[in-house]
Image 1 (tube, rainbow, N blue to C red):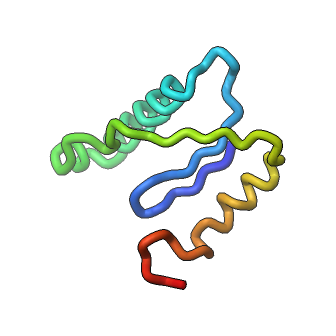
Image 2 (cartoon, helix red, strand yellow; image 1 turned 30 degrees about the vertical axis):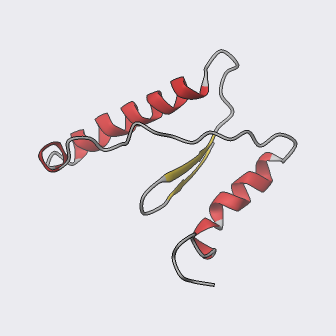
Length: 87
């Protein structure tokens, strides 16, 4: 597993069990993190109606090695983001 937290989204790289659909994995991740974050930071319960949007994006990496994906995630903050105005 690899995880990169961005200002308004996260990148998660996992190798799920074949019986788990992408929607199941996204819902489990969002539910788990929401539960734990609201438990640790109680003020979030009152400031935000929800921590996550209903949407998510899933992509398959195919023939790319796990190390390549991890390196991509690890260097995400070094690259300009779309719409940031940085070249």
